[in-house]
Length: 176
Image (tube, rainbow, N blue to C red; front, top):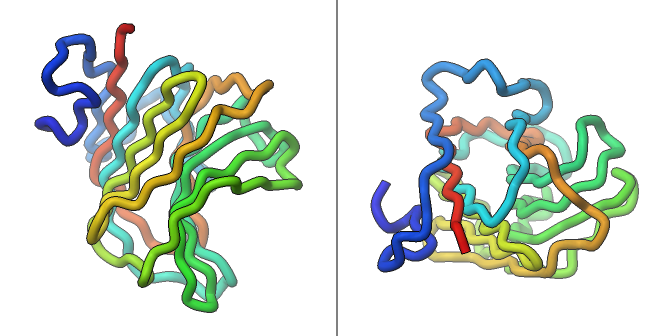
């Protein structure tokens, strides 16, 4: 994987905890609107390689890496997402919700165009903060503190109304 997935390439304090190529779905992964990995995030970097394809007709299209408590629509969660609005505005944002109905996006980085093709989504879950990077034509960043009261027990890959091919998923744990 090289240094792109290593949060500290010169310090040997990381280990690869999980690497999936999506050739065959692992037995502990749940599929649906989202792909759930039963992972309790600690001080981890999650790196997802994906290829974006055609978009549907809904008003928004998104792909996200979520840290969530439980499963279902009303679960508390925080996440980094690439979101395209039908009006042509795209952004990379940090978003969270406590109830699945009210969503807050305190940080976002606008994109000059709707991405297509290969992207990399990197989420550094490093309590007390989250650092997110979308790698496309350049790096787009969204950073924020982890919202209080959200203690995730799942990592999810979510896709909304677009064709996305996931190429790999890596989890790298840092031992402080």
